[in-house]
Image 1 (cartoon, rainbow, N blue to C red):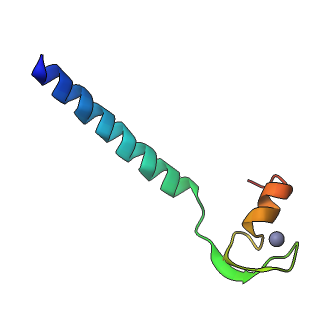
Image 2: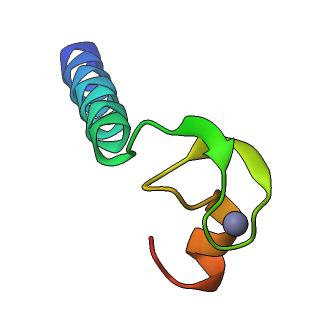
Image 3: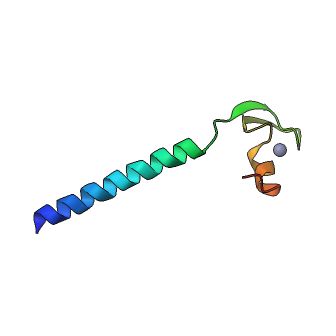
Length: 60
Ligand SMILES: [Zn+2]
């Protein structure tokens, strides 16, 4: 059933593209600066906190 396989692949691709779009929307855009918690400079501060500190303090 070639048609069904094509449809399944198309659905899967659409789902993947939607997941990528959702992920991109959920990740806040970082900005460069010094972390408020550890003082380290990072190119991707989010709300003033670097990625390792967000992990350490479970800030998400
Ligand atoms: Zn930090």
